[in-house]
Length: 145
Image 1: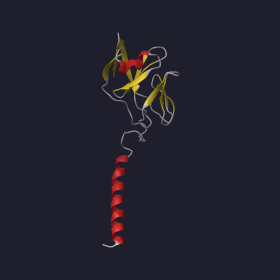
Image 2: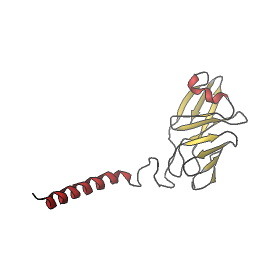
Image 3: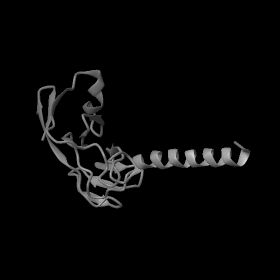
Image 4: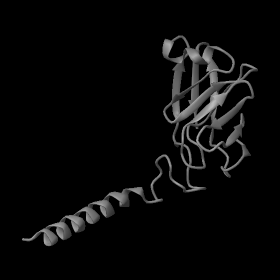
């Protein structure tokens, strides 16, 4: 085998590997960075309880605090009300944060913002967040569909 044949074989093999690697990047996936506008929804069948005395959940003791659990973002508003929405942005599935100062959910990736009711406040997101129910009983906060 001469040098030209060798390089031709190597180049064809590399192109094949690159092609198969990129098939995992198709827009049908729902991982972060996809562009499936309108198909990203929150988890279903949600039903879990957070012990507010546990140190892992201490962020929820202060107004404006939040945490992520089970694909859900749970926050305590400035008025002291517990709210829960899907953890990922409906634009491209990136994780959201809660801005306690404005009582809004925010995506740091592309700037979408949502009200404390999950309603889109600014694009590029065009779908509201899934909102979950919350019930406080003593120091137990139940989050459910």
